[in-house]
Image (cartoon, one colour):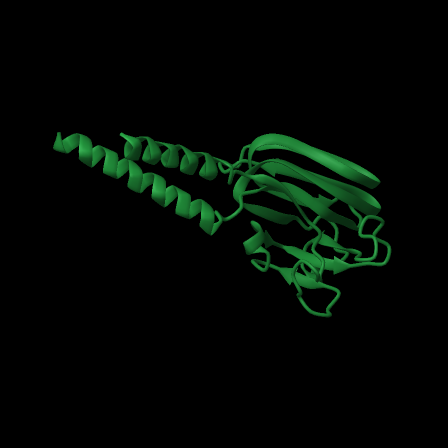
Amino acid sequence: MKLRLALSVMAVLAIMAVGSANAVPYTMDFTNTTLDLGASTQIDLTNQYAAFGLTFDHVYRYYDSRDPWGGADLFGIDNGSVEQNYLPNTTGTVYFTQATNFMTFDWWTITGSLEVTAYDIANNVLGTFTGTGQGAAATINATGISYFTFHDGGGFVQISNLTYDRNPVPEPATMTLLGLGLLGAGVIRRRRGNK
């Protein structure tokens, strides 16, 4: 009886531990401190940030002394590729490896406007943002944001400090608890079957 109770408690703890590994807000600053992409000030992005839950299409990382949000780091992302720098209306796409229920970002423009549109996995529009000048912590709240597009309205636009739901990789301790819980459940089931 004591063994059964102990195994049941272990199973509950394992389930609780796995549940605690849910998405947590994460802010990507695109700096070399987060991920060292070398000394180049402009780098085309594809899957360099996949470990952080982000991939890109027609997006490049910038370093710009005019960035009002980067502090000493001055990094962010811009629409287009390095070769398309300053070309108007080039659309960049940022994909979340796992859907997020919100996204927040700092943004700035030199001329024109920034236009951001969030989509679900079925390409339905979930929310939009348009702004000129600069702004901090623009937010789109929607369940299941799979990706977003951004482009300029005839000027130069940049995004930095992107915050989103990031699903962390389960820690080894969590996986151990889950394994013990499943083992305990199997033992209990086997003993019940032998009676």
